[in-house]
Length: 321
Image 1: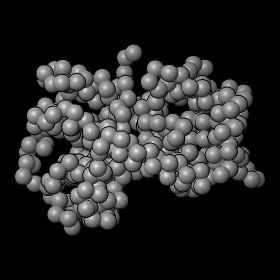
Image 2 (image 1 turned 60 degrees about the horizontal axis):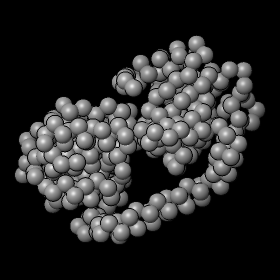
Image 3 (image 1 turned 90 degrees about the vertical axis):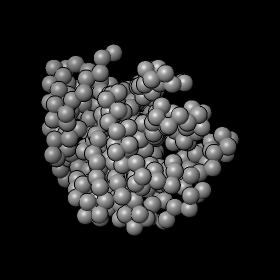
Image 4 (image 1 turned 180 degrees about the vertical axis):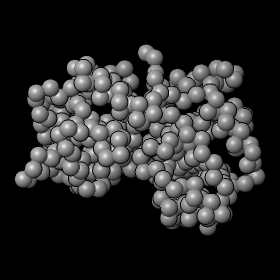
């Protein structure tokens, strides 16, 4: 299947055109706002709404203020008007209100690892309604279960959590999926402004951002924040659905350019970063692939798209898979 990379506005226009013609629209999910039901990288199939309004529990594609496309779940109607109430399954914020004309279609299935999962079955809708009826306790229970699972995986693989081993300061240890790879190289998901300040206080001198500007929790003024804290800022946006060999080469060049400095490399969830760092350590630093893979596996199991990219990069450069 050919992958097409579009800007936010182009994607929104294409989705509206395709669904407006009554055809299904397929695209890759981005972000983690729909965990645990939808993961980043899942291929989502969207069908036009037609004459049937969405039901509570269904997942919809809609255009939000500012033109971005979002995939969230219908949880009901607002009292006294025609607005739909929607919320991300992993959202910690307020319920959103969406006008009927902003709804583009309903997400009926996803593809993950070559398997199709239908999202519009009776059992799926029942489970989703129960999830949001119990919200936010369901979200807290999922977060706790995820932490326990990660610890068990690390234990069975003989991996000591790097954040504990390195004694990270509190402000840094709170960064999503934070993982130091050495005294001078810290990796993580999107930090907040307060966490960036903690990074600066800890003596880091460079921040490299591999996330795209429209990534979840992205800071619109991150460059100004970083430079205002006295650190150097580098932006290398890597398209989640289409990582390129050129991206990896630029990443290596940035690390080599700032060699000897303390560096924070982050993306949205430390998935792009962990994959690139795995390749860098194996191909540029000569690290044993199994040792380097431990830090990658502690964070995630690359999906088909990223697995293919990693294997291609290793093959091209004579590395071990």
